[in-house]
Length: 488
Ligand SMILES: *[C@@H]1O[C@H](CO)[C@@H](O)[C@H](O)[C@H]1NC(C)=O
Ligand SMILES: *[C@@H]1O[C@H](CO)[C@@H](O)[C@H](O)[C@H]1NC(C)=O
Image (cartoon, rainbow, N blue to C red; front, top):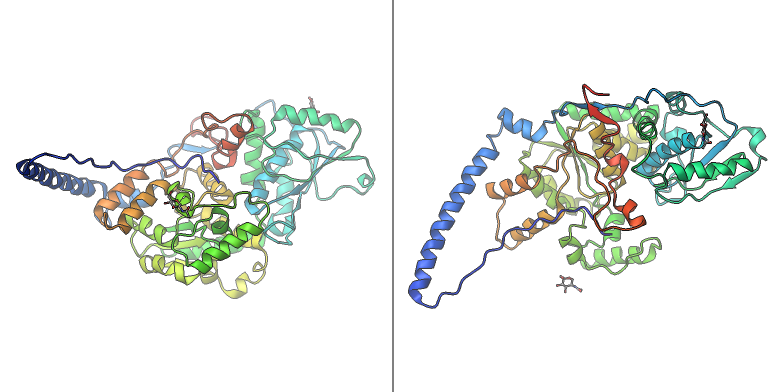
């Protein structure tokens, strides 16, 4: 539950001196008053500079602009990369997790099959996970496109050939974050087996230190080959068009869902019954290891998803006007309208897929969490601004995809810093005014998805923890798959 990268942001705390005489007090009071006066004037002057008038081009650029910074996708293989001969070694995979864990896992398995000179069988999707979704690969993805798009990289077949069904096979639980040499070593299993089955696909491949051609293959798989199936793509596009009719829009990944709140133990603003309900859910979910959570400490550490109200204060302070259209990419918001109403009062143009699409349009997807998540994914990647209220597989995948496509603006809230400001507002020490605006804008100057190299492991982390703390390849495929326009 520890989020290693939530940056710390502390407000300066004032110190008080204790003078020994009354005149000393008066002098200090006078001095203090004039400092406050000067300081508040400086603040206002700065605010005037950093927040230009409502519809000026500079403000519009600050809110919505992303220039691409001269970078573009680069996924072509190097000159020495060739099509491998057809292999009669088969790799079968079961992909686990939610939609985005499956997508990254499948892209990794494409790279693994290539590393092992294997023919890849279209992965099976785990149907027992939390998502309880019966969708198959071809329900979610365009299977023919997937096979064709990777023709130059490896051979992919829809099913294990009949004659392989009785062939000797190995089942291999792969160590997480393994490198190329691990998989080359694993190729020894081909001596006695014709089929290798990998029962879990999440995080099986290292983020870093892989050959450039393997890294670019991951990008081709993730961003080109894994296109969603036609019904999903076409509804996604339709909804994007509907949103764009109103101008630029924000996609808000509002992770204010029951499972997330139970997992993180964040109960700020909830009533006792709700807190208890979440605690019981956490208690009963075996694979969530941390049971005893102090909600206050969790929140102060920046480990809680922002509440809908907090998101509203944040977006207001960033300068987005109340007429802004906001698409909420999420499952069911915990507490529903009770907790949404404050956000909605700030931003009345708040829409969900259920309000944007007709019941008829949604009916084929409704009982398939992965397919509705795919629609959210499309609308989020295509948005003018993407704001995740919490980190997670979806937030990371969307952010990475947006970086890949030209560093589209993704604003990552500094939850730890923001919570301090929110608490000051609650205590009456700060108001929702221009000063808050300038503090929040300044805090997020460098959290908007501009080009940078992927972060390495956290300093001080050891052993397998090093891998765990690295930034995910798909969160930021820079520099391997993102290059300056004039380079290759
Ligand atoms: C895969 O095949 C290539 C040549 O086609 C060969 O050089 C390489 O060693 C093979 N790799 C493995 C892991 O068998
Ligand atoms: C939770 O942490 C806060 C801040 O450290 C502390 O004041 C509070 O007493 C703790 N609550 C419980 C129930 O331990």
